[in-house]
Image 1 (spheres, helix red, strand yellow):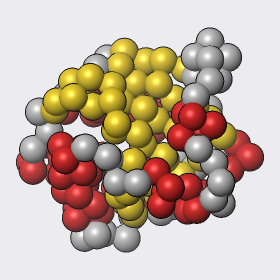
Image 2 (cartoon, rainbow, N blue to C red):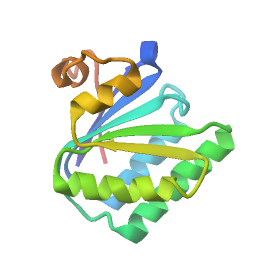
Image 3 (cartoon, one colour):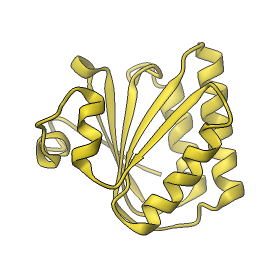
Image 4 (tube, helix red, strand yellow):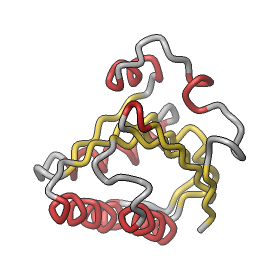
Length: 148
């Protein structure tokens, strides 16, 4: 799995793209990196693109473990974490909906799942922004790539 991050300070958002096989151990390591990295503010909205995910080992219990880490981070920083997930495939959508259901059980994390990119952008105040405008760009200039 590889992950790319892009910070959008003008929108108080962090764009996160997952590619390939998404594993629980890697998601936990990358979420810990995010929580510890002061350059990626925990209060910023996370816009998560799962359109490049081809498989995953995330299941109900593993997603519960990942959500626990995000809920603890939110409670520690006394903020509500907001995640907007672009999940166009059935696999990405089903996985994201499990995250959304766990988030609904607490006041610390809010997860919204979108199959259509056009439905996601208004949540950021970017109504007329295309997928390429938001997620395109040269990785050397705009994106930080992490491999777990």
